[in-house]
Length: 151
Image 1 (tube, rainbow, N blue to C red):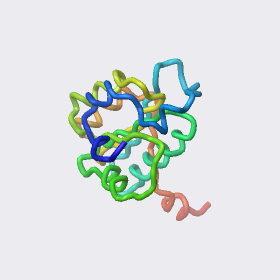
Image 2 (image 1 turned 60 degrees about the horizontal axis):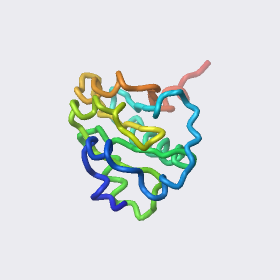
Image 3 (image 1 turned 135 degrees about the vertical axis):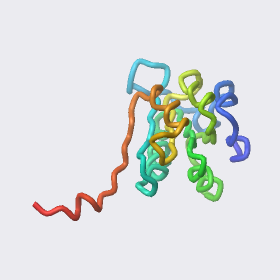
Image 4 (image 1 turned 180 degrees about the vertical axis):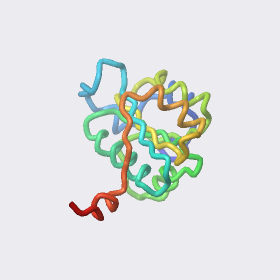
């Protein structure tokens, strides 16, 4: 599916089927008994690797699952990077920052896993909409803080 068609609202993702590469995959999801799992990648600070983590999680999980990556960050870094990539990916991407639509993550069909890249603001309306829907919350933390510690 071309990137410009993927860059649609959550509402469209609810009604559409996964990309051809994903639709041929057998669902092997055993992460939970729910129809799909929602993984929210968050941190209140920018520059800690949220987008990198979300994109890599989506690509890795897409090896065995039908995956939708939701770019909920108004900065749109995941979308920006994916639009500039000449590499085909095994997951679908949608950019959505509307909290009302983001609160409907559980209504999305045809995916085993939904990965959400969030904005770097703990008081964000988008973040407040996606966290209640999360099965898992991933909190990227800069490694340099741990490396600089001496025991």
